[in-house]
Length: 369
Image (tube, rainbow, N blue to C red):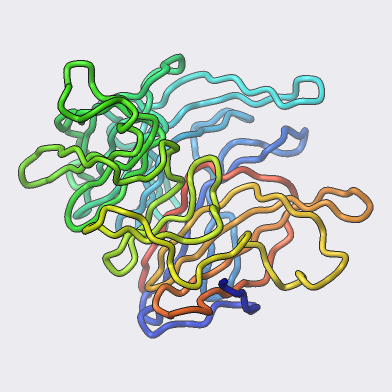
């Protein structure tokens, strides 16, 4: 069983001293308010100080219009916002109404250094809930949904070259899938899990029930996709998969973001194994866990950021106090993959002004100077 230690800031490692690591994440407001615009913004987390700050808003969104299911990646000093589903949020009696409006084809680039936005060449195929990853300074996307009323994903894929500001269509995968996860590993592009179906004219990949636990692997040299059965053990899409030290790590699926421990992928055996010392019932802060007045907490979001040998878990929680008041706070929990046991550290939580939603998974920026 893993344990959490408390700290106001994470200890620095030798491999993290030179670069200035930052973590960027996009959020939107959960509930409409007369004085709050719900549209997406981007925040920056500084691991060396354990501080968050809001840096910019995604441009072009009308008030209370929210972008969901998009991808955010970082190359050099640029953040790319790719695709997504545009929704409108408003009050409907006591509930929040949400209306899907448009599947985005647009690609936006934010310059971290100059705090400026640029509109890039749009995707060849509009899409949301798709896989996205970076390899050799190019952006690869695959799968997703391309229409609002679609009941299945697409098999198309494409690659973006920032130097040319051009998208190029790639061969289709043998499966159509959405809510899949993209990750670059061992020089290849992996599209893992998702709500997937084998293409109708393809009878070589096994029954439909195997598709959701499969992956598609793209080789940039041969320009071909290969089907990898049973890479993901569940028929529920993974929440996130990241790379540390040449190994793949995951912590849950899209329904249960934290499954109680961290897993590492064994390519030779094609299985996911629990990481020693990573087991926790919930990655909530133990700074006040011994207090009998510790408030009831519900996890709102969870995303992972790989920095050096450590996994940063960025989480948001809703708390109910003794007087039934709802409060919200963000927390960061760090797991060191290089140690054998006792790898958890919990950082000082931050009280939020209101409830916010994670719009997409975070990205790590490695700046200098």
